[in-house]
Length: 361
Image (cartoon, rainbow, N blue to C red; front, side):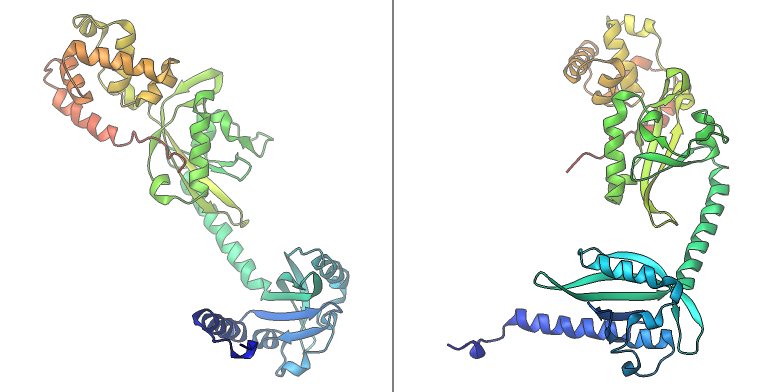
């Protein structure tokens, strides 16, 4: 069977329709699109570029050197950038372009190399009027300024973490919490300096999850201890989500709420209550942390013991008190106090926030 008799199947039809759709987009987009050969000669220009430069016919552009439409001050930059295309690199930069009427404007250029096999044959570029994107950045920065003013009024600490795991922004509450002066010369603070060593692996999972934009997980709130100056450790609630900074950098915004006062306001039974149940001091420590809403893994970190040891203490505790759940533990330890029902409601509400950090899938 000859090659000309090969039947065109669904894949061929899909490719043909894809090419037609791509051609339609390139032709009708308001952005300028052009291809330039290895000698800097324009081979193709769409209607968007014609309109941008003030020309009516494609033949007015095709066959001419791209440098004819670039301000002389940027010729060296263009020659350097086009030379770099031969190394298979692509990039984004700005140029001053000249219009047909002699005026000029700043443009943002994204360019990619074109290869046929291993041979470089030219460059494809998309061109946008830079003033439009400059206004977008200005509006984004104005929005950030408004956010900064609002963030400084809330009681929660707010941090913005860059891709190198350093906090580049701290609101006034965060600076007070971690005793960082506004006059501090440092512009970036390692994120790990804000948590004890045993919490750092959880902090890494939080940041990675937010960057991956797993919104169903990063919207959740969970506890993680914070490390304050002087080695003080406080319980806190954390939440994180990815944001797009005006600098076009992907960052993670973290909100931290110190809950030490809230925890201290919850009535914890004194040692006499535990003594009446023949509960050992180690079991008592586990019981108090269970009542505070911590998970076994978090209790192990807090007490510096293994997870299996925590389970052993909890099982012994439940056996001595003839109970099976945390709710029964709270009821038994409060021994029918009149205000327990109200406290129990607080604990149930508070327990909703104690969700473990997202794990790797």
